[in-house]
Every structure is written in structure tokens, then in C-alpha cells.
Image (cartoon, one colour):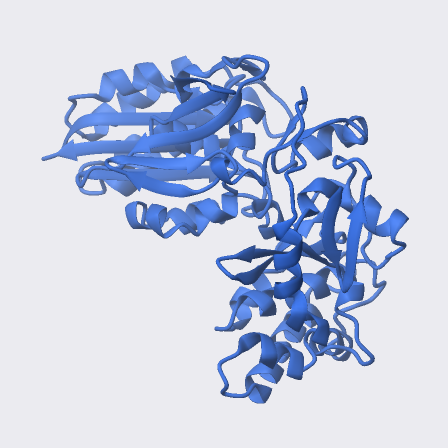
Length: 469
């Protein structure tokens, strides 16, 4: 049985865990405020909140219910727009009306749910962060001006009306941002979690975040005995052991993005991962899924290649490790046995004299897949490279490690001529094709420019941009 709370209702169901949460909400419970739009996680009309007990408190995150298996709701609190509704409009709903933030209304529930989730998660409120929390929601009517004003107005209502008791949840309830029943969710989840058993089953289909799998083949997954691994705590977590960083395969991209440990070693980490999908997608997408998806333009894999990462695989008690750069054998072909799953990904902590950079070109800056991406990790002393790893995406059938280019640059003194020569070597390692994201010639040019950008940014005193052109 799958046990969870849907709004204020305790749910216990024996439906297949692989059916889509959106379909359960709309078809089984007839809660039609949650809309079916793109069914690909792009539009946000299906957004719900997912509440989970974390260290004794309930933490909420926005997710796309169209890409989430029902089984992953087990032991959690699912909130739809109906679960926010009260006798009167909440401040978020009222400001959306007052500021003209809704027109046809199809997308409005998703915006309301996402914005309410922002208030639940953040006690230090500001308009920029509120608007950023709506990045996974698309409106085709209003032009967003009214929605932005509604976000700002809602923050003003909260700040002007909150008490100084320090209890954020009680302030939200007293100001009618959320209904009273939220007050008792923590205790109710504790009771559910006590009796909650994993819904994992032995299956040929392993499902983690589902943000790609449920786009490509959701119909074939419905009713299948999928192995849901995202709730496996043994596969989660981000830690450092000695000189090694360990990331569990079920760690989400948002958890990786906000990791204080990774931000410590990579000052621009947040900026890089801001380019990786919308917040609801990052809240579900996992690093393990990103790796085995084997997309030639995967952003996270691109970074991991440049960190010379190792993939750790397991099948029951059998375990083995392989360098990520050797994991990809061809297009969507992996050095992975049938029953193996990714246990974790590891890489060495960056040295004190190391530098890192990630570059991505896409048709839109945000919420878009790369045309070409590239990462570099370099260790140097007195202008001489002692160790370097460079990756390139979108220019080969696999996420590519530029082996020949790295070998050329090792023990070289950094100057404009060296970088120009290295760029030429990199172009001989790639095999781009012409497709919707650009011609093969265009992608080659992009990689060359991104390659130059790495060294111009990391070694501005040693590389003359004008002489590279």
C-alpha cells in the first residue's frame, strides 16, 4: 500500500506505484485544479507541493506532478491548489486577481502553488527570490507583469502582518496564506512514516527522479513494476570523506546546487547550476539519472567529467567502480550491466591552486538544453599547467572528455599560442552533427569559443583575447 496525505486527506492506495501522480490527483480524486498541460515538466500547470519530514520539520518543494510516480508520494504531504483554498482567497490568490495576474486561468493554479511553496520554504522574503521560484511556470496570456506585482504585494502583506513570535508557520496560518490543517501535518506524517515501507520492487525499469523517463515513455511505465529508488536514503547525501567528495546517486540537482560543501570548493557553483532546468525539475532530477541518461548535452555530466569523477556501481553486494570518462561507450550505450545501479559518484576535492569553469550556449539562457557546453578543471603554478581535465557536450554521440587536448596541455606554460593550439586539437576530437540546435560547423565554432572563454576567464593575465581571434 502507498500511504500519504493529499491536502487534508489521508490516502491509502494499492494502485501501481508507477502511475503518474497527476493522473491520480485528477482522475482518482477528481481534483481538477491541477492542470495537464505539456506533460513534459515545462509549463508548470501541474505543479504541486511535496512536503517531507526532514530533521523533525516538514520541508516543502514544488514538483511537476506530470513527471512524478505515485509511489514517490509515499510518506509525504502532497498539496494541490485545492489544499490551499479557504473560505476567502489567500493573499497570493487575492493579489493575483488584484494585479491582473490571471487571464485565461489555465496556468494560475500552478503559479499559486509555486508562490505558496516559496512562502512555506523561506522566512527571509524578497521579490527577486519569489519571482525565481516561479521559473518553472509559464503563462501565455499576461506577460508576467501582474504576476510579478502579485509576488511583491504578497510579500508586503506578510511582512506588514506577521507577528514577532518567530513561528513562521503560525504567521502563514494567521495571515491565511495556508489553511489551519497545515499545523497538524508534522504529527500526521510522523505516524505515516512509522509504518511506511519502501515501495521498491525488483524490476528491469529503475526509476529515480523520472524527469526524463516520464517524458519519453510514461505510458509504458504505467502499471509496470518499476524500482523506485529516489526514496532510498542509502543512495542520497553529499559528503566529504578525507580528500574525496561523495554524492549519492539519488541526490537531486537542487540538493547539489544548494550544497554548502560544493559551494565552498566552487565559488560560482550556484550560478552554474541555475542554468540546469527549472526549480521543480531540479527538485526531482537526480545525479544518478543524469549520468545513466547519457545525454551528449547533459550539463551535470559535463561538469563531472571535468572533475575526473568516478562512477560507483552495485548489484546487490557486488560493487565496482569506473571513471566517468570511460563509462560511455556510444550513443546511449553504457559500461553498465543489466541489474547494476549507480550507487554514488565521487571526485577528489579541488586543490588550493586549482580553477574551475563551466560554459553553456543555448537558445535561451535559462530553461533550455545546451547547444554546446564545456567545463574545465585546471591546476597550475607560476603559469604552468600541472593537471587539467576538459569536457565538451553537444559535439559527439557521448558526453565527451577531451583526452588528447588535456594531454597536450599538461606541463605546458599558459600563453595565447598554447591555447590556440589546444583549441585546434580539441576540434579534431569532436564529431558534431547538424540538428535543431545548429549545424555541425556552428557547433565546432561554439566549442572553440567556449574553449577560449575558459582560459580568458581563468588566466586573464596570460591569455590575450584579441590575439585568439
